[in-house]
Amino acid sequence: MRLAIGRVRLNLHSEDLVGEALEILRRDHNIRREDLFLQTKYTPITGQDTKLPLPYNPRDAIRDQIQSSFQKSLTNLKTTYLDSYLLHSPFNTLEQTREAWRTMMALQDEGKVRMIGVSNAYDVKLLHALSRDRKVEVVQNRWFEQNEWDRAVHNYCKMNGVMYQSFWTLTGNPSILNHPSILAIAAAAACTPEQALFKFVQQKGIIPLSGTTKTLHMQQDVAVHGLEVPEFLDKLDENLNMIRK
View 1: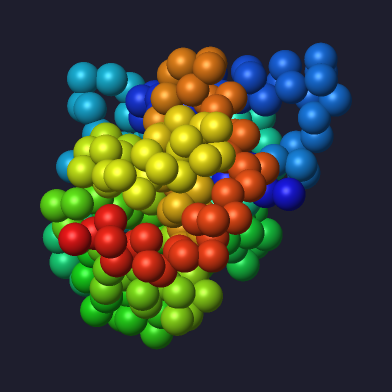
View 2: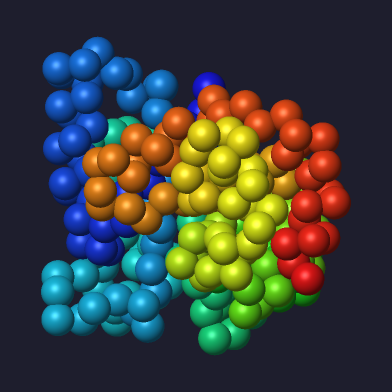
């Protein structure tokens, strides 16, 4: 079973801490690397905090930046491969974005990464353009009220078998969290409204990412996978339409 909700939000320079945690899991808890889904990103310079050490030389070509950043991630995470590698955000031009994409394709061809994708991609035209070189396998976007739940991109992903990961799933949806339908689901399932919303999202084929740093909240997030809420599942689309009104 893939852990659907299992990412603790750390800053871009905390991969080494994740690597230490993975080593503890292996050594003390017999959790093997192959039992985990490990994902990280290449972040262009526009998304980096330049006051901190960078994983690449920003004066290098995009290809060289990605290769340096990728190798640094492998070292930090104490692994020889990634399950998923994402472009943190598109570049200013399609040409630059495709150069980055083709570099990631090469890493995949070398067996160093299993899936490649893009984050903060809200234009379906971009996904079509990248897919002319190779299918986008993962999209990681904000799923929240102000962008109308990223409907166009999410629908594209459903139709094309693309893994859709959401962030801002809780903080970006206060109206849904407080909607009577979600509160009723939470009461019926003896869970929190946050868990009910995560379950709701999962049943729409979305993998919600957890940004919590609280142990209890992470335990609750992981427990969502096993929640049974039959009344909710039977009326999923009805609830979806009602919650979004």
